[in-house]
Length: 622
Image 1 (tube, helix red, strand yellow):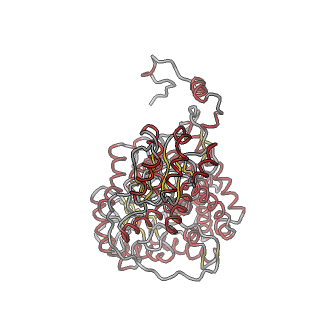
Image 2 (cartoon, helix red, strand yellow):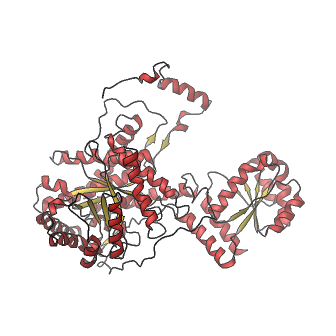
Image 3 (cartoon, one colour):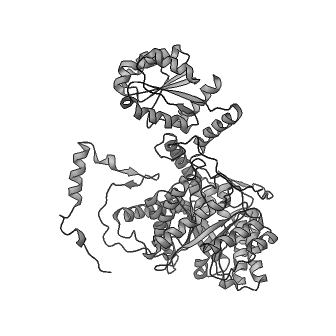
């Protein structure tokens, strides 16, 4: 493929330059600072609105040229027979690998496979494990024996372990981080983990065997830099432990792999996967190793899933898969769109599987290696992530490594701060979750999930070493809690709480703010009663009385508010309104409007969640 500086198809058009673009932008900004167009990530990394082509960029080494990633399908049904049927169906219909999620694993989310030997044998029955399919185990300390049971099952069937592509997923650091405690010190954990690794290697399994799981940080609301640094520090901790157990570092190099979350921020996700490859290569070089491409498994992000308007999760997963695939992921597991509601049914599982099949077989995303190479924006973001993550990794290393850093709450404090900022942005709807924090549908149909009884595992040891946990979260949960209250009220009383939209003037005056107010309140499960425009305060008050609502929101333009809002508010208050909202910022009229009876103002950028929670408290007191 030849390199060209110009697109010949556009040769008849004058060549556009960055300076030309800046002149056009400055004209639109009309004196406003250019920095208004510069955004920042949760790590404070700058993202410019446009970049020049990156010079001298080379593709990041990842998957083999034109090689597809493994299409992993999540197997987590607590009933082993049902799980086996799912696994066989998935493999027959396009999956090229299985992610076996055992109860107690970080990614189990309430369900998971039974880790007993009998259950493992039943789940794997009829699956040709040496036929080129990928197998990944997601296990926790309580289900750690599942790895041994899988290995023993393979040996018992006379299958050559070296012919199997199995990632065993040993990861005590990730489990400890999520739980916030460990029954054992790191010095006690190391021989147990390395003993299992040496045993599996001696049986002939080529690995990788230990997982550095960045999902732990992402699920808890952490940033890309924090996720990358956690993976680096955990991976180095496992490499050190394996080498200290007497395994040559060159052999240990292939025994560790990484897991990352892929979310709907396309460019950040793509850059994050590229950055991890570069960072790990730097660690290999510093260890005296010849760098080899790290195996990176991806899960679409748990925290971005919504229970409401769950079909939008399909779109989020598609973007995440697209980004992880182009970023060089070796294997991708798409979380079914209904997972936040319960155990996914066959349709949800099929949609998850087909998301990858379409991107690979119809869009041919794997045909170009590192297609983002040379993109000014992606290259810059990759470099920024590398620099910031390496700095945090060094901070963790100075603390003594991953386990001591957890004991000192070094990483947890940073994740908690990022999570709080993220939650504030969600509450103010600066970060939008379609169907949950914006554009709600109070009348959406119920989504089916499977009935299943989760596997209950015994507690795991005494919490001798305690530190702050990094528990998983979902960004939409606070808004969904209000929707749940609304659903409960509908079931018990036959009606949802309501708010009357007091639209003033003509449709041209009130439509924009009435639409905003309807979405605002229905996001919290409060049904909006829309109306035609009113000019007469008496007619408005009569309509409000007949609505059966206790609260009301004035909606119109600033011009109409100046002329009619005060009179309307007085009439509504006289008609018995328990609380009056106004859609829009009050400006200079605030004092007069509050005197007339307006209690609160709703507008873009305000704390929508806090306002909705207070609205519920008012309604419950009324």
